[in-house]
Length: 143
Image 1 (cartoon, rainbow, N blue to C red):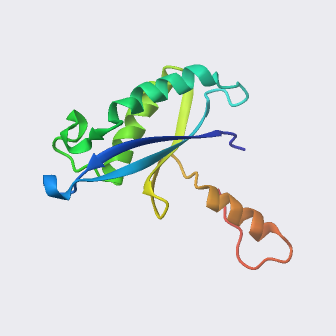
Image 2 (cartoon, rainbow, N blue to C red; image 1 turned 90 degrees about the vertical axis):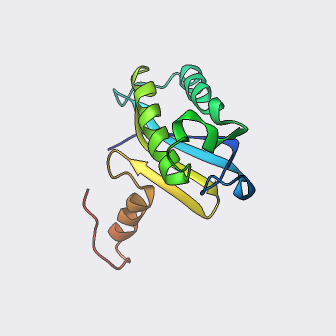
Image 3 (cartoon, one colour; image 1 turned 90 degrees about the horizontal axis):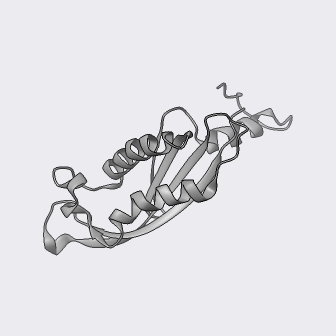
């Protein structure tokens, strides 16, 4: 059984898909992290974890992402942002003995990009529970 914490962070930034100033627009991005300690039953020291995540994400607050060094040659869409954030935060949190299992990033409530080092989509686990109910229809998903 995988036990994890889910933390959400928000930051405001501007970006453009074609690097044209007239196409720049703002978003409040939401970043959701699914984490646990390397030893599953150890608690996370929230202060250290939160401080590390804020220090990383604060560099993007009120930033024009197209001008940020991480995105000079890469379009700052949620897919590329998610990939960069996942790799960077995974390395950063490993120093605190914290495993980052999944990162979700969204620029609005209708559009979320998920990146994971393993299959960890909560909806899959919800479907397993539904399929194991005696009155439900469908096959049981296997992990």
